[in-house]
Length: 94
Image (spheres, one colour):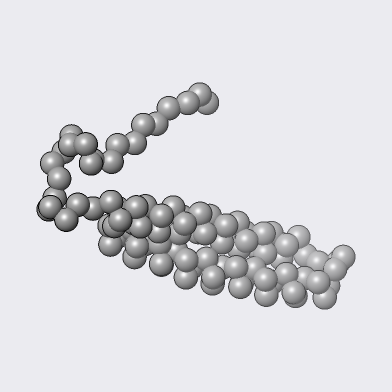
């Protein structure tokens, strides 16, 4: 539970770093537009992509940690297979 919270906070901080770096590069590219180097545009897009992924990881991790924190029983730890155990079912077509 605390690991999810910690990972979520680290991912949230990293999201801020990459989002600000992408914004800084975007501001620089606006000065050279439309003659900017393609590698500079790619670097900006990569920073924004990493920021987007980190935001998703942060939200998922913080949400999971919050759910686990709020759903924990005050009676002590539960055993595997009890009604309060969280189960995930994965399925679908690819």
